[in-house]
Length: 324
Ligand SMILES: C[S@@+](CC[C@H](N)C(=O)[O-])C[C@H]1O[C@@H](n2cnc3c(N)ncnc32)[C@H](O)[C@@H]1O
Image (cartoon, rainbow, N blue to C red; front, side, top):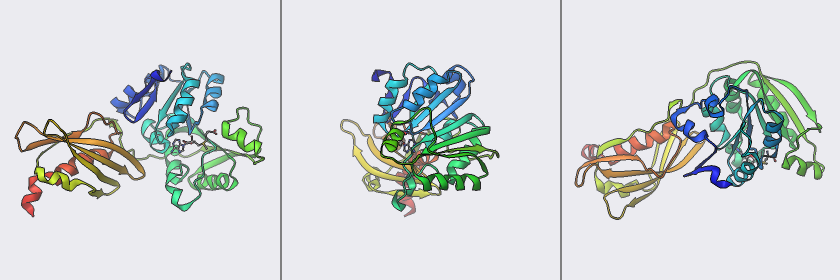
């Protein structure tokens, strides 16, 4: 069954989402699903039982699920692979919701039992933060909703406060609701005697947001006159500019040709990606080098990923050497 999963490099999409993604962002979901039905998004679908039941009950809607756990993705994929109206994506939902969906394109976003990440040191992992409501204010249709179920009371209350501050309306707040579909975590917390809280929050104000990608999903190459001796100096170098950070984790000389493979971690704010660049002379013995994304890597072409190519080319270039 797993052969149907599109496992390519470090990205997984069920069915045909991936090719659509490569061409253009935001994704044209009507061409992915072959219809213009309303879209419902679930963040952190876990084993996928909620998504599966919901999608079976509502064949007139399309469903997109986001997960970061590959184990969960595989379990959920088995449940939903025969459903035409479901697509699963392995990606941080904070990135995916903003980059894959255009303005007013989602009817509802659902989150069931997210980890609240209450420790200060884990704050960076939280999904429900003011920026998340900015994304919702853009991607939800007018009157579209965000639904949260949680066993953590302070988290439910904090979510309502943030939502109100961000111009949303609280439609419903229930303690121990009788929910028709119960997720795996929900069943567990009920068994342990914990209270369950459910919220429905409605968008009333639309805002424009800045997307990281937007448009054709391409990657520039860089050409530079390279000083080869500088390549080992790249190791552990950190480059920063505005919201972009690029860290070089390793530089490896390829055997059998003049190429170097460069292991890079780049971040656009909180969104981090690991990938490889390759640097090689344009022709044997030439001082002109090409620096580009290695074909075995497939990061989203964010500003930091694009910048990594040019900032490394600048560092390696002889111009820099002459100016010393
Ligand atoms: C506590 S589990 C709940 C799973 C399921 N919704 C349930 O109720 O049984 C939280 C899930 O959210 C996923 N998750 C955490 N952060 C995420 C993010 N930024 N984007 C997408 N999924 C995320 C985790 O991998 C995990 O599967």
